[in-house]
Length: 120
Length: 136
Image (cartoon, each protein chain N blue to C red):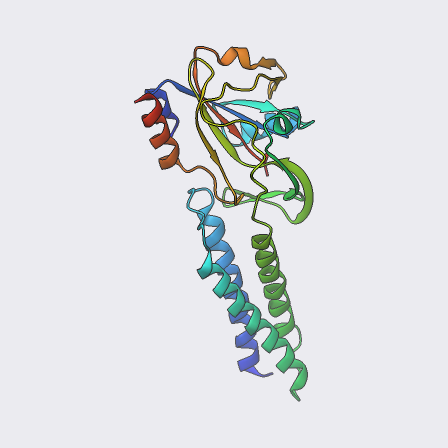
C-alpha cells in the first residue's frame, strides 16, 4: 500500500498510546517505514476525542505464531479508537474514517479511494 | 472407553481451534469479517459438542478420562474466549473533536526514535494520520 500512497506523495504517520520502547520494538518487528508517534499519556488521543475506556488488550504473555502476534492474558486498558485522517498540504482534514468495531480498520481500498478523491 | 464421546470431544476441539485459525489468518490479510456469523456458529457448535462430551462422559458408566475432558475443556475455554472477545468489539465513537474541512489540531509528541515531533512538520505535506490502539 505504501507504494500506492507514494504515487500521491502521501506520507503515513501513526500514533498510539505505546511508550517509546514498545513503539520502537513494534517498528522493528513489523518492518514499518512510517513515522511512529508515541502518546503514552493519551494527550493527543484525548485532544482528538478518540479515547476508548476499558478496551480489551492482549499485551501480557505475547508470542508469535505463524507470523501473527498473539497473547494469552487479556486486560482492560484505555487506548485509542482506530481513526484515520487524511490531511492536505495546508493542514486541512480531507477525510476521516473511524471504526465502530476495533477489529475492522480502514482497509486499503477505502484509504486509496479517499486519497484519489482528495488528491487525484 | 466410549469412542463416540472421545470423537465428539476431539471434534469440538478441531472445530473451535480451526475456527480460531481461520479467523486469525484473516487479520494480517486485512480481511477480518465485519459480521463473523460463520465463526460464531462454528464456535457455538464446538461449545455444544464440548459440553455434551463432558456431560455424557460423567453420566456414562464408563469413564473416558483425560481423552474426553482435556480436548473438550480446552475447546470450551477457547470458544468462550472467542465469543467474549467479539462481545467487546464495539468502540465508543461519537466524541471526535474534528470533522472534514477542519484544520488539523496542533500537537507535539515524540517519535519511536525519541525525537521530538510537532504537527508543524506536516505543513506542505500530504499526510495519512493513523491513530491506532497500539502494538500487540
